[in-house]
Image 1 (cartoon, chains in turn blue, brown):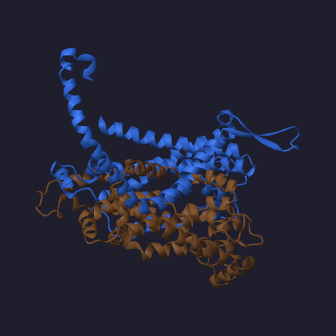
Image 2 (spheres, chains in turn yellow, red; image 1 turned 180 degrees about the vertical axis):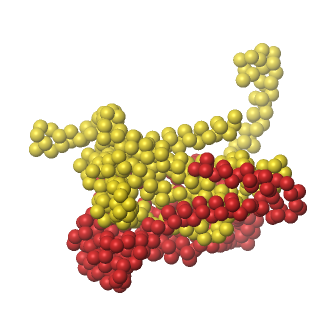
Image 3 (cartoon, helix red, strand yellow; image 1 turned 90 degrees about the horizontal axis):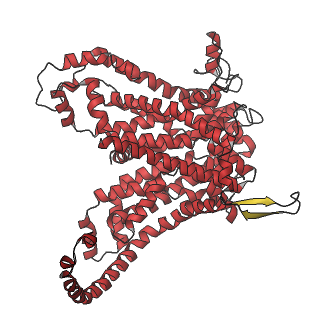
Length: 331
Length: 308
């Protein structure tokens, strides 16, 4: 930094000094470099047996499939003639990506999960936060019992939950629709218009309790002194909860938000099991389902492209959420 | 939601503010709550408890009904005939007893995968926390990024790679992805960094103990974190559906989730709805058992994960 601004006089004198000192250092730096290298080798030898088993598998299960998909997304299978003479794989450049961004099925599926996410994630997190604050508040009794009750849906595998709800939604079999029928309300949970809400309900049912417990755990860590100080300033009850406690558990809230957004974009189990009661549910309802349809129609290169786009989208979204929240903390 | 919360707030503050702050930390104005808001809180919490428990209750009740009664009468109360045992017998006899095979597969994937992944994650997390080596931060950064990459998005690339290498439709195609847990490494590293004293490692080295021997000592300290990692991995593998349904065409290799969804899609024939519901209920039992038996461990680990 001083080089362009500094005159020759200021630069002149130090030069020989650094040279001579560097000459002096070279001997010791060579030996220190050797010991450094020895130390590093020793450290590596020591850590390798602990790190390598995981790292090798991690490379096999995460990095290689990702790299392989990335590579495959730039190729396409071209069938020559009428497809009788076999096919060959050719380099396709960005053709697959262009196709993805013109693929209405895939874009629609992204729109659907975005719509479900926009209604479901804020609602779920708001409920979870209220329940967590209630569990944490002095007004709560039997907190342990409620915590267990809220956590129960988490123990049900996604598809088992989907299975249960598929019976509760089924037009002819559901006890809920029968109850509503007897009350004179003829509702369908599986019509095209109702489907996003029905799916959002399964997600809310399955994940609210889990998020409640995470937020509750963070609330428990808010120091008692902070709340006492707030109380001295006349801030108690819900005002204290919203103004003092909630900002304190920002990291936990952010974590639940990011994981909920990611969860919505990877939606698969619930709509897949809903299909047995909703024949009108499109086979490309969510991005993962659209990708799987490409797999089942043997269009592997296109499936790889869809996976890459979806993965990249999720990464960008989570980074954006982290960024946005970091900015708000700064200001 | 929040707008309905406001009404009781003024009364709480009005009542709680006047008494002078007491010295004892527990007896602060925060703990004095008027009965109205206590009732309100209880009502809201009970309502949501009902919402979370009702579908589970339906599952339990329905598993005790014969196929004739399953969809008649009240869905949320027991039928006239208690048919649980008949249902269980039908379940385990269906298609040559394939359900027990599915349970066994799930157990094998979940317990085996859980144990191996926990051990690998603990070793790696321990090294990342306690053994300095060049490139350590790069390794941790990569693992951390992978925590954000959701498993379902990775499932298709894994399938493409495994079908390219011919691993699909084998035990290993589901087992190998199950033993890698980046989240486990993350949690293990955090826990090891804060709980294993450097003095323990140095003392071990001075005494001439091997690194593996020292790790074995550290593992005892890391036990709560390891139980948490095991539990979460067990649940993740047990509940996994997409990966095994993609990888396994052979029904004798499938876990219970994939099998049950296949049965559900038959729409009642030849496998009856009562059998599917009973199978669904029984498939949840191992997860519940695991949670209950390890409760004291995972509740601690969960708190540590949420706070840090």
